[in-house]
Length: 191
Image 1: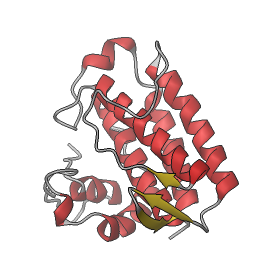
Image 2: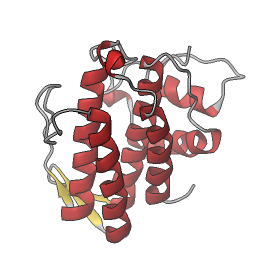
Image 3: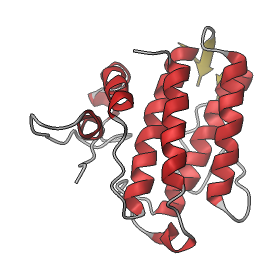
Image 4: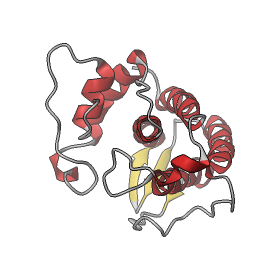
């Protein structure tokens, strides 16, 4: 498995490709995250990228399990996709500068920077898939990225995270791709 920063860069690259699919008409569409429409998902993603930026830039993130609608990020009025693209570029720059050797404190809990970057990579990639699905496109997570994220997911996500942060695992057949297995582990049916 590659380092967390490399995974985060690849996840962001994949997700930027999904953001190209977003149109103003799609913002009210449902997403695989059942409680959110695409507009709310994009706001959540903006908040997540802001938290990951804080992790790299400040070495700490205040844990704020804010509901959708209240966000750490101050999203630009107008185009949420443009805001996410800009935030993603700044995020990669911040992590490249900070590296993944240090410690990041998340809600008072110290974690390795590599772990935080890995958690971010899972979140970014899976939400990139969510965006594509909300836009009516099945855009699989690339196999090599999904394989590495799937190796990391059980270390970071367990049954205590269900049903609060993730839905129950979805069964998959023996022929499922790594992307389908990753999505199923996180409670999503690849359809």
